[in-house]
Length: 299
Image (cartoon, rainbow, N blue to C red; front, side, top):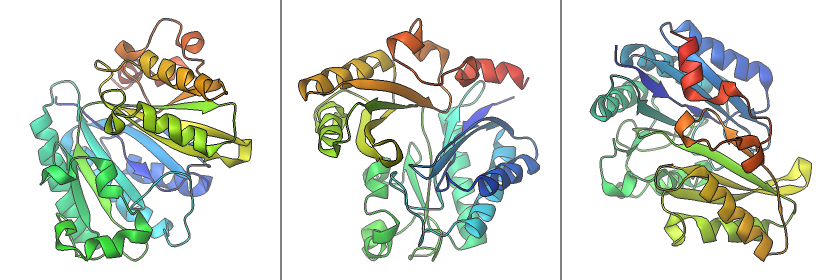
């Protein structure tokens, strides 16, 4: 059995009944195991972690897109996290018995079906990207939903599948294949966005910072604090502890401190230090967030 992980990010993190309906739609497709679900009202975004074989995951993603287009209207959607589509991004990640090549094929097949069935533009990214300019998710998503029509008017940004214009309420979806990543956020004892943004610039790879780190500053307005939100795309190159210490150091240079950190979704056991709650000041972390532990539960 070739087991593949899929982590759809959906632009809805506030309406619990909608999130529950999306989860139910995925599970009803059959053959898909939901390992984790995480919703953030400030980001207004939900992340689902699924595992299964390729045909089941394809069915589950198609069903999710259909339900999300019915329930989510990006014309009225607001949240702290950048987004291009109702189903914003769908990565496939090889696990046991699966190859990256198989995930690339799955991404392309799923993208073609989603575009054909729903008239939804689809961009391919990371290992499935059709051009080097589309490998980086941030480059594809730049301009977000509000700037999508203008962006797609440039032939360089014609979608890989689907119409050359956005879906009126669902925007576009980015589908691809990639290695595992860790979604890791560090909250600061400050409400100053200039500090969060400056730290993000100083630590992210694209600005000359840490290898395999993507970062941005986010305002958590209900709490009156700011966050450095990161994706660690290769924890072997940059361990999670190094990313945490870099944020802590940069925060102290700017006269503030770290309150806590959080892992969104699941994390490989090998990525965690000893006593992660203490060394990373992790908030709300449990064994249920360890990928291998959850996989054992579904076998």
